[in-house]
Length: 66
Image 1 (cartoon, rainbow, N blue to C red):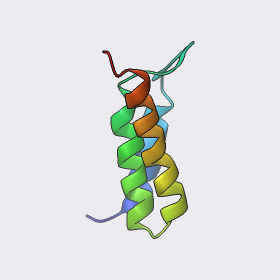
Image 2: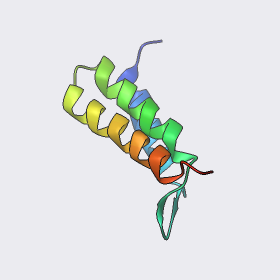
Image 3: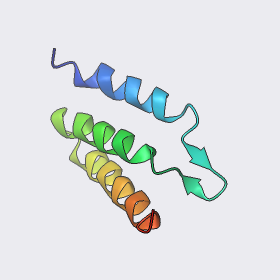
Image 4: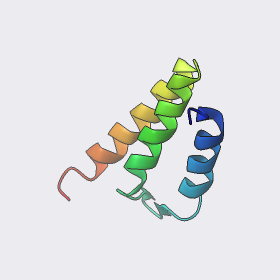
């Protein structure tokens, strides 16, 4: 429906529900970072959007051998 602000809040709540380990974010958190970044981007907040996309890439790099 294009309600990116609510969608972003839902993704942040879901991401905070256990996608971390003692060594950082689990590989499953990549999609949440990307989706949150897309929501920020769609609402015009490119700075936070880029930060979320960067976080997704960092998790991917961390698990490159997975």
